[in-house]
Length: 365
Image 1: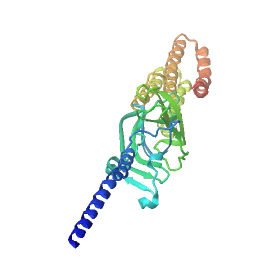
Image 2: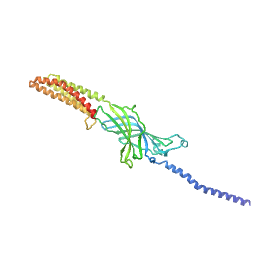
Image 3: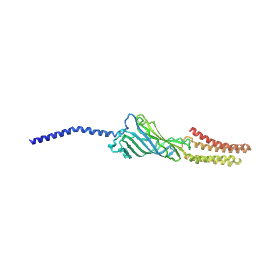
Image 4: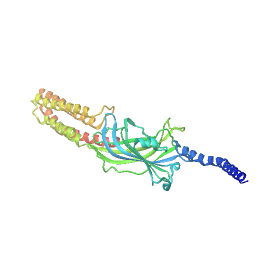
């Protein structure tokens, strides 16, 4: 009897255990599937899908402008580019994760371990050189993403050299988020920076500006209009170098060639020699400026100044020949009056034309 009871109890226990296993099996599936779905959802590579485009606050802190090349119309710069946007999919609980913020630094961590989408910003007007030297991504608990990278690049920019060497230029670096139009990603200026620490040889930094605009781009998503971030550096050339090398010496030389009008009219050969020395000096200065100036298709102020000096000295040769001809025809009084008039007409005309060229340069250009 006891044996039968023991067998019955063992069978009952076995049945109860099997029932519990069968009952627990369908409950295990709902508990394992949601974490897998959540894990795959956190790896979305596209921008957040909201009713409005993703706003990326952008700031470029320009640390150095290394070179401004007038010949190729480019400038080389280095700076730190900071992008800030919000992605609610990357929000986390610091108490669960155990950190106040997630930090991914270096190319490996950023490219391989960071699970979030990020705006790939490119330099639109790059001139063949663009280097990213480091990258840091900081993810905050509320989903705010801060991407910091140091860049070095050469950018193409349009230069207006008509006022050379008294010109001012605006150097622009234009950035965009590659592959997304302004209905998906919009760039906004985060904060303004100053130019206190910048220094460029032969240039003075007058200001730094940042702005955003929309420009047509056939590759920028469905609407083909991309949001652009423009960082500009305003510079003014220090004209003292060209002034002491070309302008002031040539003015003195031209004025000295006008001394031929005080020389004896009988020494025509000496007067012609002085004038031709001045002409050859002007030609030598033009050769020097050709080595300094880029090959451009419009006339600059320095070109006008050199040509003006050259033509005035050519004029002294013509006057010398005229005075010599008058002397040969025994018209000494007329020749003397011509010399006396030219002693004042040539210097006043020369200096007056220089002032007029200055006025036209700033009014027209």
